[in-house]
Length: 615
Image (cartoon, rainbow, N blue to C red; front, side, top):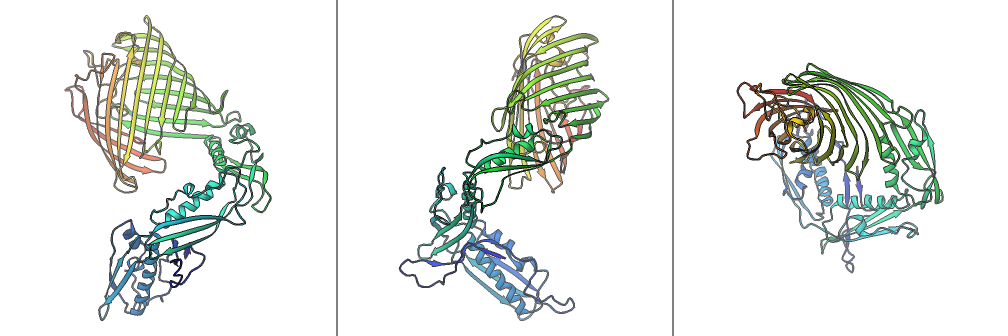
């Protein structure tokens, strides 16, 4: 099926005074995978087999479009029964090629073909000379029934996104139509649509004139909200996410923003919001119908990871996403390993005291035997989180540590209270497998309490990562990351072991055991540090849709001083990762080798198995 931009086709003659001759402008093309005009060949009969060569310049993407649209190429292994049928197949391609060229702005292509050979296999040669590329001379917008009385104005060429004089590319003009319709949908006309279009080509000047006719429909305003389909979710969840005021001019973008906000609560499987009535009803205030299908409120999960430094770890989780009917989330996560056991509980109350402000209460019970120290007890925080803008979120709160910490055969009590303040920017396109954008987070926490004596100090942490794709299919992606940390106010010995900085392991510098990068005591146990600097890079290469390889290089160090000493050498590691891509994210297997291996401390290699990219 071929859809045309023109509603009329004029002959390519006459009209000398205007100098315009009309042509058919193709916006979208369809073609069958089979040759509908050809008879199905008898598999035992002789066929008109052929070899095809198409000569077309590789400019403005036309060569790829020509090759993709060619029946001669697509059906070369299914030759037609006769030479005449082969001729018809060629003529179909010629017609398709002309449409492809027009869609890219080439209105006078010279397309020629030749069949050589007395018998099969025939040799088919096609050549395409694009000719001059036409430009956009005029883009006119008319309204069916006359221009409407629009309180927010009417769009023009600037709002369409087009520029007079640019190449007359079909996709650009089709996109301009959609942009104009969208513009009207966001300014009171939800039923606006393009009802007709006409294109005239001026061959002497190699440009075109475009006229589109828009049927605007009635001007409507937001009225009352009618809610349907709620079962366990309370209406207040919907009402606090309304993005308009009654009487406002209808705005489709506000409707979509409300729909996205409601889907983000994770309590709805389906959300539909639309004005009551049809395009034939009169304008004015319309009741907005909001229809919902609730999702299941509870879920359970489990996971398994393994690394040579920490061994196997099993995780299990349970979550309720509508605890009291207002989209509150209660989650419990348990991690059990040979060295680490932790039970984490979290409660999130959305829109607490203010719209978009969430209350988060978390508390962990833990018993962990780590390379640097052992700790048993509880830690947690109560915080408020809010969006600053689309990508930036802020948080502040109160944190605590009630821990018994053992290091170097000495057990100490750590009782700390902190006031963490943080901001996180994230404009990446995927949480588990980002291919573009960057993340950066900063967190400053003043701490006070007791650790054998009264202590007061401030920790600052900054970490970031960015992702650069080298192709449109995101098959080759470079990931870069860095982290920095510093502590002020106390000497290292007076800072509780769990609040010092450490490096090494799967989330830091792969290839070195967990926490072992940096200063060590006489027994080669990590002491931690007052400052930290790490960097890393990895190249994510998709070999197939499901399989990938990831070479990586990482380094860093932990320092006694309050700032990293760049005169001290860094510890470097390199490795190779393998990825198996699933619908929930990549499964990761990494093997890393320490390049600055210390005798009796570092193993020849470390490997890690987990879900999601390393960063």
